[in-house]
Image (cartoon, rainbow, N blue to C red; front, side, top):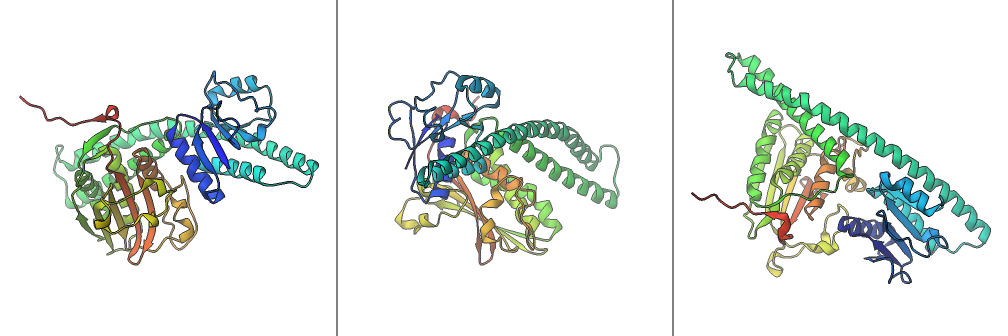
Length: 404
């Protein structure tokens, strides 16, 4: 089966490929299309709608074979344009869970041969009711997200002020501190920093789905990012007497990334490791060149098929592994823990509020990399891969030393 995607959004193309690979055992082929010349070969059309876009001729005769992604502000105009409620619509930006549900239903509808026209009509009517209900839920969800983003934005200001005042008192410009006072202020500072990171993650997750953002790529030193992330996380590790061991190999090729964003990824994963490693436990961090074939990678799963002996294939990426001596993650949840606000019941819920890992995946995806989790003999391990390939030079800012 063929899916024609009328869109210039490469992230949407990758998302569709991942979703359809999960739900249809790779029997669906997703390819970019212009909506005109390829109209006879696509079994299902996915339209990234923009105002002024021409509608397909088969829209009203075969509405079930078309799915439109529409911005909330364009929804009323789109409804007036099509003049019917039978068109399948999802709000932008596409959420993995919603897109999975609708593409799965569309795949079943196309593949399934129903015994009678009456049964097909009843099924289609029920599906249409569900689509309309889901669309209304998406509108409410976007309203909730907008409110949350505004609230968290206002919440971050007093947290930043509180953190600054704690740091000011610890510097003792207003007078000396006793040892007990210093300890209390240090704990307050750590707590406010943790809350600030959580607030920043919630804000970025809230607006990240609605604002297309390209990272400010620079030629950077991954070792400096790792060092800064370890500096940020060391106080939390010291509180639990956790031993952090590092083995970082230099990158043989330049890496292009946004330093602050990659630092945030490393901090989130290290913070997760500190949270679930036992008192007196161990966190191991390693970095090394790695061969990675991104074409074979789907979702947040280990790229097992891509593992090769290093001397047989030149490395194409840099890989960072962060493992801890905590309890294993249940196999069925290794993928889910990267979803927003995901939790699951168990001995210890490693997903927390689902913020740190979700924001880590979003940032890594923006850098065209890959992040996943797996269980090892020593405990859970989270891995990040960043490609060596140099991006579009128009998006890269080289750091040029100043000369006199």
